[in-house]
Image (cartoon, rainbow, N blue to C red):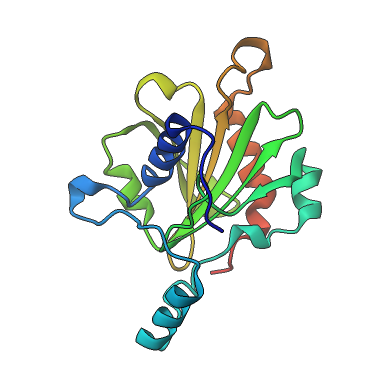
Length: 197
């Protein structure tokens, strides 16, 4: 599902946030995720050149039942499996808006590791934690958006699931959610949907 963001600034911000998740560190020599085409010709080429889908092992957070999502106060009609309309190779993404549309909640899944998150210099406030019984790390962005966003990356058998809460711009003050408290609440509530070890 390929589309465009409403403004170039919005697209850049959303894309930057997606590329900033664990393991996309261009400073480490790892290549950043690249958009995957969804056209028939791209699918045919991928099938012809690989005997096995390389993303088959990556957990798809959009498989979480709508009933579990709505029970947490999230709007299931807002569900989106892209970042600014782009599907990134090597990642599975699902996001929802809160009921009052004051923040977005995103889950990103990849084969990267929690240790890769800790090595990044564009995140701060690393705190070791657990989600269920799984090792995890909570952290924030550096810079101006620090107070708007909070992440928790959780170890899984093949990589990580990263939970992210981001207050929407303009929802500051009384309308804002404390993102670290909210990402903790949501990740704890959804831990049973993560792949088993």
